[in-house]
Each structure stands twice: as C-alpha cells, then as structure tokens.
Image (cartoon, rainbow, N blue to C red):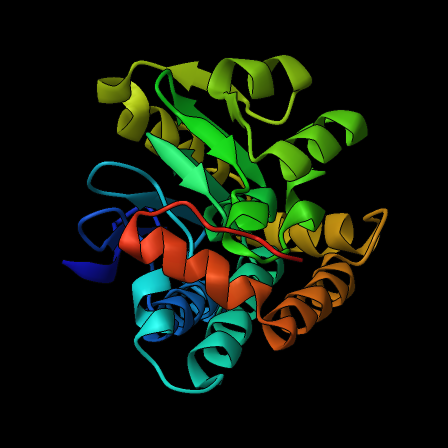
Length: 253
C-alpha cells in the first residue's frame, strides 16, 4: 500500500495510489506523488506515465482528518503546497501522463486528472469538487479543463458531480470502459505512445504546454489564497469539523 511506481520493459511508468480507505492523501502522500511523477519524467527510459489507483476510488482529495488533528496551520499549508507540487508535477512531466480513473475523483483528484494529458475512465467514475462543503476552494482551474465554464461553476457552487459519460461527451475523457477493462485500456494507450520516437514525444509535450491557453499553476495558486482567507475567518474549520464528526455544520457567516 502507499504510492508506488513500476517501470515496465516498454518504458511505461505505472504510478499507483493505494491509500485506504478512500485514497485521501496526507501531506506526505501528496509530496510523494509529486516526487514519483517527476522522477518518472526525468528518467530517459520512461516514454509514458499511467497514473491510477487501487481501492474504492481514484482519489478523495486531502486527508481532512489529518488536518483537523494537527494544531495550527501546518497541515493546511502542507496540504496546499503538496497539492500544488503534485498537480504541477503531472502538468510538467516530460512525457505524457495518462490518468486512469475509477470510482470517485474528488477535490485534489480533479487537480491530478485536470492536469493529465489524457484521461480514460471506468463507467462508474464520477468527478467533483466538494470544496465548498469543506470551507475551501481550489482546483476549479482544473475542473474547467474537464467541463464547460457554466457547468464548472454549477459544480463548484453545489458540490455536484459529473459522470464519466458526461466528460466523454464534453471530450475531456477519451474513453469510458467497464471497470475491469480500465487498466488494459490505459496500458494500450500508453504503449501506442511508447512506440513513437521518445525525442519527438517529449518535444510534443513541451510544445503543447507552451501553447496552453492559461497558466494552470498561477491560476490554482490564486484559488489557494481564498482557502487561506476562509481558514483565517474560522468558517473552514467549522466545515471540516462537521465532516469529521459527520454532523451538519451551522454556518453563521
């Protein structure tokens, strides 16, 4: 269990998140994912990366329980920096990153997937940002790469989720397959990339990032500033406490 990376003979790095019960990552976990992705991209033998997960879902975001069990703002700052590092590592990885998503993809999971080059998903996959319910903001930058603008806004305000079929309709998910076929679909796609010239593929990744329409790192950092403000106001702590204790928050502001 934990976060691991295995590189096969075709040069495909398979990075797997396995953090029961729901793949909510601790501060250390986010930095570990960032390190694994960066190391894979820096390895000249790697031609493509598959980012996937074991367990009930792809990713449930940050570990709220760790945050609430930590005095002060160290865990909050750590989670924000860890998410930033992991999202950036996926985006800046020197080779294409294929996200293979099953079950739930929430919060920080949206940041990983939204910055991936290609997404394949199982039929049971759902995507969403419950940040508003947790007294936080963030990753709307990445959600807006998956769904149209007004759909994104509705999802942020209501914490509603979208299905893999919806994202396939929008064109952000390349392929939707049965759960048992997900791993095979991701690996076939990775092998089709690995068959190309690694020099050309790495140049293609750099060039596509260079013509991107907006700076995902800067826009996500802007969002994070509002999360810090919400924490200083106290409303975020109230929302997270309610989540941990499984009670309804009583918002007074």
